[in-house]
Image (cartoon, rainbow, N blue to C red; front, side, top):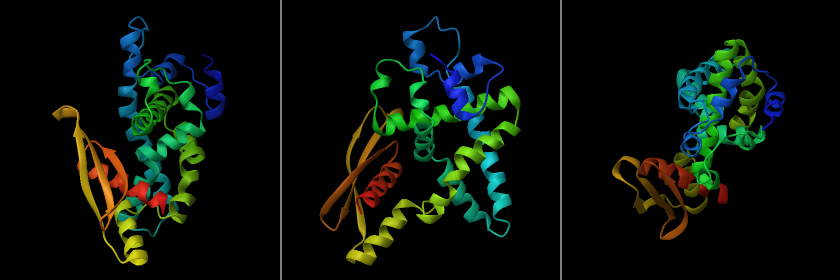
Length: 226
C-alpha cells in the first residue's frame, strides 16, 4: 500500500512511518494479521480526539471574539462529530488506506462512519506525535474549519431534534414523536432502532448505542428527507 499518496493528500510527510501505519490499523485487522507488528489505532484516536478538540476550540475562540461559550460549544460539536469527520475522511480518500478485517471491511452506514471518524482522529494523533501542534493547526484549518461556512449556513450546530421539531411544527402543525422499534446486542453493546413519526405516519428510522443517539440519528435522516 502506497501511503505516500495519503501523505500528499494531507500535505504532511511523516518522519516516523510506523506512526502513520498505526493510525490506519483497526483493531479487527490484528485479529486476522497477528504478526503485523504494530498496535491498533485506539490510543492514537484517544490522543487525536483531544488535540483536534483543542485546535478547533482555539480557531473558534479567535474567529468569534464576541460569541458566548454556548455558541462556541455548539459550533465545535458540529465540526467534530463522527458524521462530519467521516465525511471529511471520505473526501481525503482515507477509506482506501485503513487496514480492516474482511468482516469490518463490509460494514456500511453508521458502523463505517465511526471507523472513518476514529481513523481521522488517530491520524491527527499520529501527526501530533510526529511533529507537534503546528501541523495540526494547519490540518484543522485546511480540512476541518473549511466546513464552518456549511455549519453556519445550514444550522448544523443546532440539535437535530430541535431543528426537526421547528420545521415540522411550522409546516405541518405537528410535533414529531419517537418510538423504539427494536433493541439488539448484549447489554454492554446494545444497538437501538428508533422511528420518527409525524402524527401516526412513520417517516424514517435511526440507529444508535442509546435511545437518545438513535432519536438524533432518526431526526437527521428525517431532515434530509425534508
